[in-house]
Length: 58
Image (cartoon, rainbow, N blue to C red; front, side, top):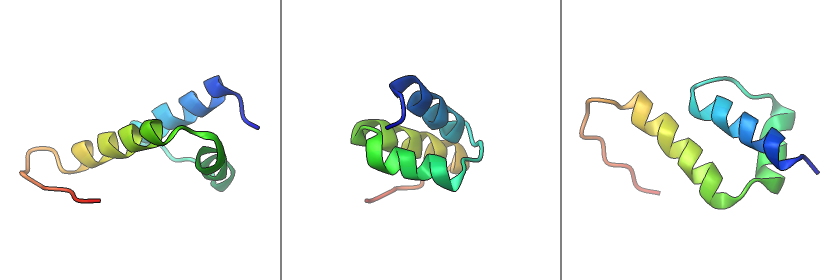
């Protein structure tokens, strides 16, 4: 199991647009809290579609 601090650093990197490895993605899938994954995904979406009135549905 990955330590909480390690998961947070991977989430932060992903939210900032950085690349993550397949192993890190699997660790996030297995161990990261769902709300933290959602927050990182939303950060990526907001940056990618900044300045638009893009509506996202999940």
